[in-house]
Amino acid sequence: MDQGNTAFLLIAAALVLLMTPGLAFFYGGLVKAKSVISMMMMSFGAIGLIAVLWAIYGYAIAFPGAEGTIFPWSIDSSAIGLNSLLEVPEDAAFPPLAFVAFQATFAIITVALISGAIADRAKFGSWMIFAGIWATVVYFPVASWVFNFGLAEDGSFAYGGWITHGLQEAFGLGVIDFAGGTAVHINAGAAALALAIVLGRRVGFAKGAHAPHNPPFVLLGAGLLWFGWFGFNAGSELAADGTAALAFVNTIIAPAAALLAWLVVEKIRDGKPTSIGAASGAVAGLVAITPACASLDPIWAIVLGLVAGVLCALAVDLKFKLGFDDSLDVVGVHLVGGLIGTLYLGFFANGTGLFMGGDGTQLLVQTIAAFSVMIYSFVLAFLIGFVIEKTIGFRVKNEDEIAGIDKVVHGEEGYVLAE
Image 1 (tube, rainbow, N blue to C red):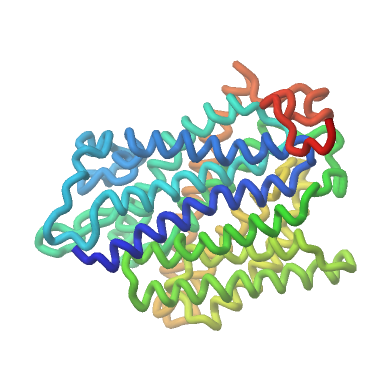
Image 2 (cartoon, helix red, strand yellow):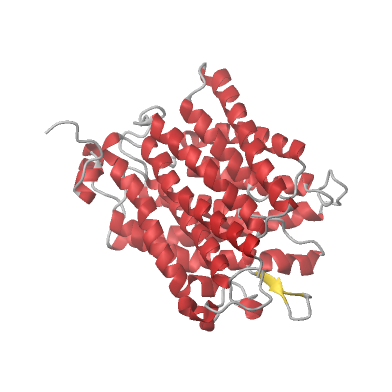
C-alpha cells in the first residue's frame, strides 16, 4: 500500500467535505437575514443524511463492480454497509475505505448544491425527503455511469459506467469528466431547475427584489469552496502525481480568470463590479474546470475560465426572462457552467478535441453525456418534487415566507442583537 497516496486521498476527502459548510456560508449570505438558518441547515442536513445513506447502500449502487454496467442502475449487495471493504488487499494503492470516504463527499456536495434554487421558501422536512430519494434514484446511479471504473485481474479495462466506458466501446473514444462536470454540476443544476419550477416563484419575485443580506458570508463561503475544490479536482487523480499537479494549477487559474471576466461583465452592464460577482465568478470558473482540469493546457484553462465567467454572468439573468425563480442561481452557475466545461473539452481537450487534432468524436460523446444526465436528473427531480408538493407540501405558506422562515421552520434566528 502506498502511504503517500493514501494520505493524499484522505486529505482530499477532508477538503471536499469542507466544501459543504463553505457552500452553507455562500448560500447563507445570499438569502435574506430571516432565512439564513434555513438555508444553511439544508446543507448541513445533506451532510447528515447523505453520509448515512452512502454507507448503507449508496456506495453499493455507485460502485457495483464489474456487473455494474446496466442502465439505469444496479447494486453490489456485498458492499451494503461497507463491511466487505474493511480489509486492505496487499497490492492495493490505498485502502478501499479511503476511496469510499472520498466519493461520499462528492455525493454530499452534489445534493447540497440543489438547495440554492429553493431558498427562502422550502420546508426542511420536505427537503430532506427529496434529498434522500433524489440521491437514491439519481445521484447514486449517475455516479455509477461516470465514476464506476476499474481493472480486471489481468490488467485489462474491465468495467465502467455507460457514460465513460460504454460510450468508449460505441464510438472508440470515452467521455472526459475528470472530477464530475456531469455527475455533480449538470446533475445538480438540472435538479435545481426542476425544483424551482415545482415550488414556483418567491413572493415579490423581480430583479433586485431579493438582495443578499451578508456579502462577507458569501466571500467566506466562496473562499472555502475554492480551497476545498483542490481536493475535489486534484484528488480525483487518486494519486499525488503530475496529473494531480496539472489539475491543481488549472483549479487556480481557471476560476481566477472567470472571476475577472464576471467583474468585467458587471462593470459594463451595471457600472460597478461587486463582491457577489467576484464570488460567483470564481465558483463559475471552478464548476467549468471540474471536468476539464486534467485535460487542458493551462492557457486553455484560462480561456475556459474567461468563457465561463462571461456566459454564466449573462445566464443568471435568464430566470427573469424565462420566469423561473432559481433563488441563488444554481442553474446559471452550475448547470450552465457544467455544460460549458463538459462541451469545451470537445473542442480543446489535449489530443482529442476538435481543435487539438481530433475529428469531432470527443464533442459528440461529451454532448451525449451532458444532455443524458441533464434530462434524467431534471425529469426525476421534477417528479419527486411534484409528488412531495402535492402530498405533504414542499413550500411554506406565503406569510411565513414574507416574515422569514427561520423562526417558523427551526425556531431560531440567525441574528439576535438585543433581548
